[in-house]
Amino acid sequence: MVLWQSDLRVSWRAQWISLLLHGVVAALILMMPWPLSYTPVWLLLLSLVVFDCVRSQRRINASHGEIKLLIGARLRWQETEWQILGKPWMLDSGMMLRLRREDNRKKTHLWISADSMDAGEWRDLRRMLQQPTQP
Image (cartoon, rainbow, N blue to C red; front, top):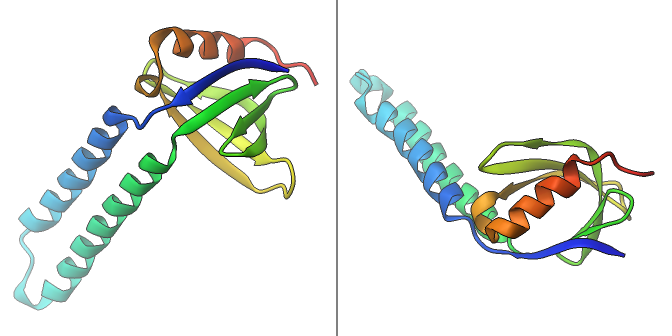
């Protein structure tokens, strides 16, 4: 039985925060007074920041689609059932869910941003996840 469902959209706030943080780190690397002999080091660090930024944007874009909260602290997301582990970590702007896959016990974290759904859906999800879960 479905307790709650929504169609998650890509979070623009999460994309901007990721870009901002990676941009600040890249700017710090570029503005540090590196000796000329350290050029390969700062180029490597800058490359790592750029690749991590691209990876972060891809992960944010992949976190969309239909999501359903089921009875028994279970979640159906991206055609897979997940068990919600523990109490979600909640902020006004989003929540972090610790999930374990039902079929192979793979664990993951899912950040759900408040701007990825309607305000009413966000309010209902927070209310549902703050209630004690039944086994």
